[in-house]
Picture 1 (tube, rainbow, N blue to C red):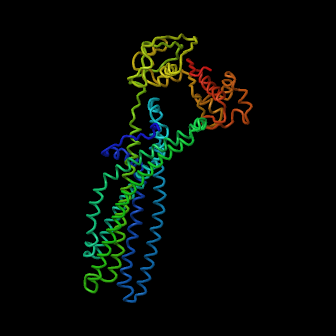
Picture 2 (picture 1 turned 135 degrees about the vertical axis):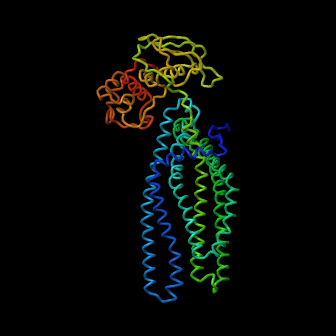
Picture 3 (picture 1 turned 90 degrees about the vertical axis):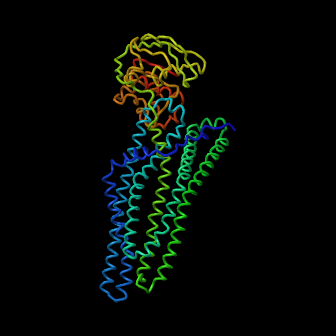
Length: 517
């Protein structure tokens, strides 16, 4: 079977550049006060919870042996109060972090979308829409969660770890050293696994992108697929992409689980040694029964932040791959843009002249070579030639959707289109492309798309001018009839007429029909 471009993985970036992380933190700094409040609330809830083992120790070593009912009651009330405070703090913190996460998603997605709107046709020519969509939607969601909850939780878990160590040494320093003995082993393990884990998540990012890209194109081209009875072949390709995605996902998860399993194993070994040492020293001056039970609680709580930090690290490694893809898109150069000092194109008469124009979508393969021709204002001409002769290319170049390889295009004999602003150029042109794209919304919205200030009467006049008024009026709600994206309920001819009306409504000085029929 021929190789499909969705099987082609994007280049892996290695090593990770800290500049990416610093750049991502810009989005965090915008919400630093909310995140600081969330961190404080989380810290208070965490510290309050650490008093539980201490209250247990006081209960076993003081209140129960001395039959002090009043102390036992006070400890019970203290424990209940601490639990309730923890719930309140955690609830408020969760609400704040949900808001911060959504704000970060909004900020990144708006910046990414704004840049995508500026990128030239050449960018979209070489990339499947699905690969772009997965970056804007899936990757941004995941990265935003890392930047909000990931950062807060990592700081919190580190603070928890420090506070737990303080509580442990305050309870019993000797047993605390026994518990800490397993920490260097765990840190060494993370250092060893880190490179493999990052590469695995990069591969998973690639395969997931391939899968989503093919899914988006398959849905968009479902009519063509059914026309050529491609269903079974498409299912086969999708199965292959899904299997590849599953394999790299399982590989990444397996490497991540190595850290989790190792931490659990070390926890149990340390737990066992702590109890053996505690029982050995029990009855002497080193430990009491209450101390052993309290330290047993602290062992679990000591390793819990470490396990959580390991999970956060897994999430970080995963999202680093996503972050690279997001910033790769944001850093994509806008090759077709206003040059420094670009002038506004005044109201044009309509003369268009090609002077020695050469162009190729691939710089090494020219489609147009040294082309000369001119069109006077008010004159209508037709470009005739076989498919692939470059007719649509001429349309794209007049509107400056691409930069010329050589030569120049002049408006009114004096305005080089490369030296005027894109807005002033394109706002005076009306182009009906071969693909009569219809947006989701009403027919009125679609015709008014390029001129939002147009009145209903002007919209209707434009529709009448292209003979679209009659079939629009026969629809259930006339001009307010809702249509789907790409106008799936409209015929090809109806879509063309609506697109033509949209072009005429803009009242262009230069009118170009890439689909003259």
